[in-house]
Length: 324
Ligand SMILES: [Mg+2]
Image (cartoon, rainbow, N blue to C red; front, top):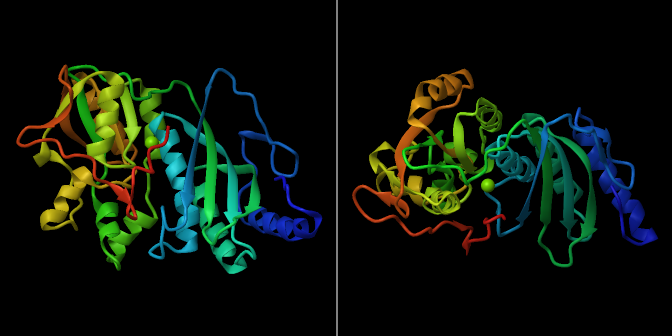
């Protein structure tokens, strides 16, 4: 980790860096030289593709006090790992950038580091380095860049007419938690501790069964439109087949379509692959549900009713989850 701060601040920043590094996994098979140098050195890959992603979280925009500092640390890793899995990659290394108000809240940082370590361990990532800086205001800013490797990558462009549309897990729980100032714990956990099926994504990539894939960060209403545009296809979605989270009642059930932050996978695969997909999902302890069929139409549609306009907002700030 490197600092650009003045001498007087360097010692406190070095203490911050040391406290983060002491609490998280910093070594792994992907890292040849990690934190403690001017830059990290990754091990060369033999034939595998390097896959890299980055995701930022800003206090009051991407989280509020429904998340503990440990939740924030965990989630910062989970959302990045989710993108790696969605590409069919196995996670390996991460770089962390934190901007903290001055003076830094050491108790907050300690809890954050605990959650960060939980996330890194859960998704097989090791911290290869990073940077800490002073934030000018009173909001914390966090960014993680994560990398992994894939024998072959999937992406959003390969869906073809006739493919089946699949999603993993339950939908809508995190969005329901966002609507409640004090959500019940089962919903709060869905928001604070998402469990993207990263290893399953990698297995799907290796299986060669999947034509297009992405993770559901902003909700089906938004994300499925992106996948259709990238592939140049349409899809007819069976609303009655959606795996609505069982705790969602009444009008909340529409959040399975319009809500975000579930971090499940959405993918397209040929109908003939269904038995092998179901077997792979069962072997990976992941539930998958077929919810539609791709065609040569224009974007996603519902059998009964119009496709909802994307309405997902992070804590009242629309559209800021659209990574590129
Ligand atoms: Mg994504």
